[in-house]
Length: 175
Image (tube, rainbow, N blue to C red; front, top):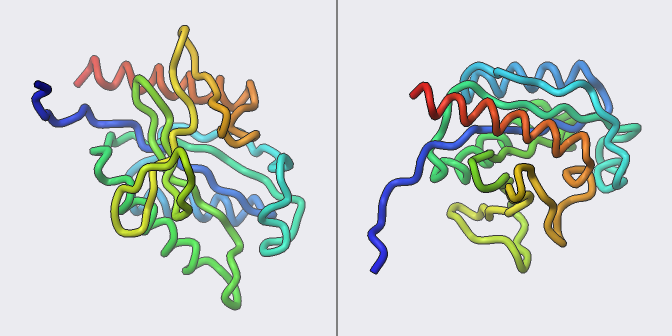
């Protein structure tokens, strides 16, 4: 019989997509107000693996990934997605989004994103939010799965998250 126990805290991450770097940077500031200090931000990256958001936000689109200093309980993921949805609404213009924010977390075994969309591999959390298992840590690095978004499958992006995981491991060691 397995004995239920509390999981270790996880490393909060987020991604912000927008056609304007200034909007991305402003939202990163808003995320820091909600979740605490940001401890790493990726360079500005083109978001060009899909045109999914272009009709709503225009293009070309760009993205920054980030991680936050304070670790979180993985149970907070659905609440984090609701917070980021509200932030998207606040910075939007005329009822349309100007940014897309995807919160998630890194732990030793995986990278998980929060989404409001159900699918075969997604697990319902609460409050209309699902967990998307996006990457798994195997053979000393993050690996893709058949459903991993193409932009998260990019070698450079996976290397970023390998570095975030190393930072997280250090945080766990230091307590």
